[in-house]
Length: 398
Ligand SMILES: *Cc1c(COP(=O)(O)O)cnc(C)c1O
Image (cartoon, rainbow, N blue to C red; front, side, top):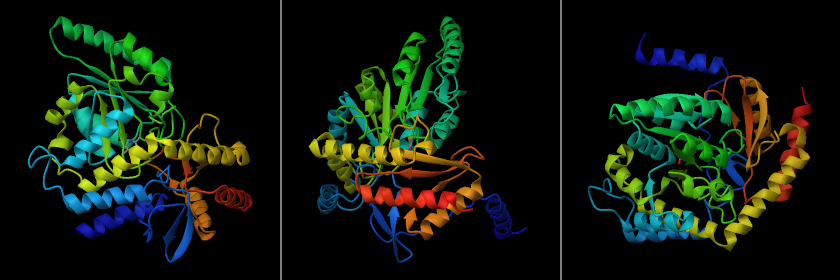
């Protein structure tokens, strides 16, 4: 077989399984509506929860940085000097999350890869919730640490693994060998919209001498009295060794971050390979993220967050039986099951003018395909009403 025909055969198998993915070009900014194929579609697909991706203040901040610092950043921040917008972003992150230090990365994916690889290696243990994001799974594999997975949000299963790791650590320290244990979970799970019992996880990791890293990709901006995330809401942010997140969801720009102790950030600058060996993100990206954080931290952030929760409540009230009770976020999964059924429902919704992605394996387990509805501060109650009416109508059609 030639190169192309071998790949074509693989693609045909992916298509046959209902798992083919294709890019859909959009000719507008992200917002409550998007322009696709010359049509305006209602958009219930994005993680731009607070509607900041095209917010005037975020745009203006990005444009101003572009004017002052140019389009590119030249090299890795350790090589050609570290541009002011990245430092200003990190200062804003520390002030917002109330931590000693922060470090930004080109993406959330690169953050997970860099941080996990810097903290654990083949002598250590990494413990993951079954449903953590692919970036964390990839990072754990790449780190070479011994990987253990606990059942989703299952504290008994986690404790069993932590006792085993604790024994292993005691033996290692008797032999003067290093053995760390790092637990990694998400605060809000990206494809299920449920929340981790962080307070209980903190108690367990303290009891067993492990470290905890929490990915607040879908929590930052939405949870907690000051919208810092679920760690703030549950009152345990100070007990988490590594708080990470993305700048590309509620914050409205792109990139990733870590917040925590000064020593953590200093070590990452020395050890996080995705930080060291990669060109810094464009200054406009950092400036946009900083503007997003400032909005979130202020009164407009509070208004926007409240608007999201109102729409979530509206959708859940109208669609009660279909949304699991544990789901307590802006992510509203409608579990369909079959991959082709989910695809076909997404297509019929598109024909009706509504854009909702069908999420399939390997993003979720086989046979657990779903429509992943996300609501944002940019939507109106009428738009959510329209979504509900269309979902009802299509669910009743054969
Ligand atoms: C989106 C996401 C990431 C990756 O962040 P990017 O900035 O998109 O690379 C990491 N973790 C979780 C839980 C996510 O949902």
